[in-house]
Amino acid sequence: MPDVIRFIANYNGWKMEKRLPVSDSTPNSEVVKLLSEIRSSASSKAFELTGIDVSAIKSFAASEASGKSGPQALSSLNPPKIRARLKELCKEAAQLRFAEALFNYEILRLLGVKTGV
Amino acid sequence: MEGEIIFAAKRGDWIAVKKLTIDEKTALPEVVGVLMGIRQAVGRKIFSFAGVDTFQLDELAAGMAKGKRKGFASAAELLSAPKPREQLLQACKSPDALPHAEAYLNKALLENIGLLTEVDTDDFNKAYPDYKISKPRGNFGKKKRA
Image (tube, each protein chain N blue to C red):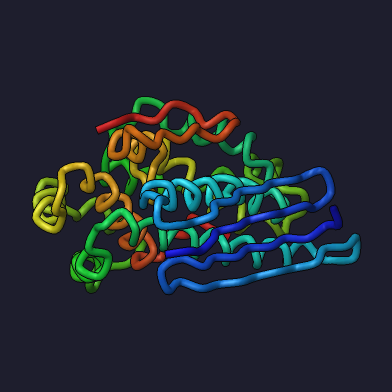
């Protein structure tokens, strides 16, 4: 098997194909870039397929982050209020943890907290 | 409905293959499961290729988060605190990797206080008990749960 990184997705209208042949001269930065793209796509699609309302949760996170920046702003969030709103946005109780994870991801991103390459 | 999701990677000693052929019998959780598998397969490896020793930083994060409560207040405190530059540099192959090490430390700190940012294996298994997926191998510390 030659050194290669390959990702193919063809599912219910979602089509994506990425391929990178890898040799000794391939810089790690190229590998990192491709893997980050694949990871991001897989993660986003996984959230979407859990059935949570991705756009509503993203909008809610944007409203909570509005006018704030930096990790210190996390201390001003009201967890019971956030949990209650996320519960409202979930059709099933089992979705709440997925909704919370997406909310956390979004709020951290919007506040400028880096957690990825 | 037919389709497929394939991830195949070989770079030096690292080999990872995740594959799902999709047909009308494929259940939605199987698709979510394979996507989570791909995400898990590449998650740590991205930082490793970026020159970061993630296992060293897992230990550092576990120590920093020890005794902290779950939630946003702890996250604000941990993420706002000055980063231990020397220890971060020790986990880097070169100083260029320092921003990546800081990002990984942020992620590991959040995981230690139970602030997840991705579809989690335990939550997936709870939501879809018929399609349990295994956890990735490695030292992930002990997460606090809600």
